Each structure stands twice: as structure tokens, then as C-alpha cells.
Length: 284
Ligand code: MG
Ligand code: MG
Image (tube, rainbow, N blue to C red; front, side, top):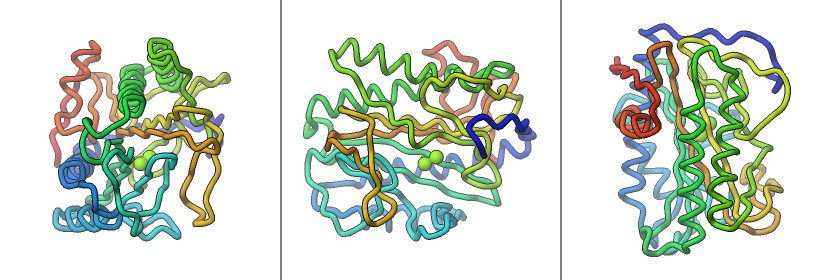
């Protein structure tokens, strides 16, 4: 699965996309639940248990548990943790910047999404953390908006990077855009070809094909993008201790338009604001 793989990735059929919307909605509702329940004093293991019960109660499998060596339903990355934080007994405090990554498989099809929130609500957050999270989310949608059938897939990463440059300029800071971890195709497995860089890359890009389903997932820091993996062999942290945000959606693109599979409304509202054609997919 090389970054410059030229293998053509097949698009999904309408029937397959409908199943992916079902999986995506379950992920969206699980993240909605976790966001509504999280409080100072809870542990990230508490959140993981909530998510696992919700996914299994709705006929899904926590697909992170299908990744060799990983036993949890969520990844919970706090403050200077960028991605792949393992749920544990860590007690969350008001003002912690928490990224929650969640995936589910339903009827053999997968969804994967992440969001960042401030524990205790936005009023508990440091201004720079709120800006970081908001600007990362904005960059995700810029990437989604760049996804068009027939266009180079690498337009997505260029749009993400340009969005973060514009946001950072307006805030008077330079964001670190993490390059060691990338988005990916999704379908019968959570992680499939092609790789989807969340930043601008030179070189020949795969083309976006009708029915393509990918995950776009910018990881952004308030400092440098340089990172390292902790001794638990999963948790990725910034080397400079700066805080990080991570936003992700699973997205389907067809000739008719785009559907954000892991957004509750399919992305209808935000895509309209971005003047991107929206193509609803009814879950099956
Ligand atoms: Mg994810
Ligand atoms: Mg992913």
C-alpha cells in the first residue's frame, strides 16, 4: 500500500454505499453519545465502555478490535497525544483537549471517524486549543470539498494544508500538520488503499473514481509536527509537548455528489455552505 501506488481503486455500488452509510451513522451516533456523556472525573476507559456497548447494542462490531494487537473500541488522545491513545484509567480534567477516534463494522462494511473536544465544554478550554480544534475541523471539510470524481485524490491534502495555512495566518501562528499518519480508503476493511495524505504531496496522484469511499483525517498541532510513539507502542505524542487535534470523516463521492458517511446529516448543511453537491445515501 505505497503512497504512490497506481493501483486503481474500484468505486462502490449504490447497494454497498447504502451499507457503508449504515456503518457510518452508527459511528456518528456513537461519537455523539461519547461527546454528550464526557465529564471531568471520567476516565478514557469509561468512554470506551460506553462506545462499545452502544456499537454492539446496534448490531455493530468495534472494528478497532479487528486491528491486530488492539483491544479497545476507541482511541482517546489527550492534550499532547496526537492519535492512537489507548483508553486507560487516566482521569479526565476540565480543559483537557480530547480526541476521540471511533470505528464500527456493520454487516461487513466499515465506518471510521474522529473528533476533538474540550472536557468540561468549550468554556473550560484554552482559547488556542479551541482555535486548533476548530481550524482542524475546518481543514477536514476543505479536504472533503476538494473530493471530486475525475480529480486527483491528492487535491484533498492540498486543500487541507491550504486551509490550515489560511487559518494559521489569521491567528498569527504556524500549525504543525502531522505527516507520519494519513487517511485511507475504507470499505470491507477499515484501512484499505489508497492512502490519503492530509497535506500537500508532489507526485502522481490516483484519480478519484465514482463511488470511492475514503477517510480524511488531519492531525494538527500547536507546535511542531514532530512526534514519537510511547512505550505502549500505540500512543503518538508530540515531541515538543504541544497539544494536538484530530478530526476525521468517512466520505463517499459519486458523480451525483458527496455524502459524508459519518456525519449525522450526511454533510448536507456544511457541504451546502461550501457549495459542494450533496448526494444523500439512504442507509440499508
Ligand atoms: Mg479513525
Ligand atoms: Mg482512519
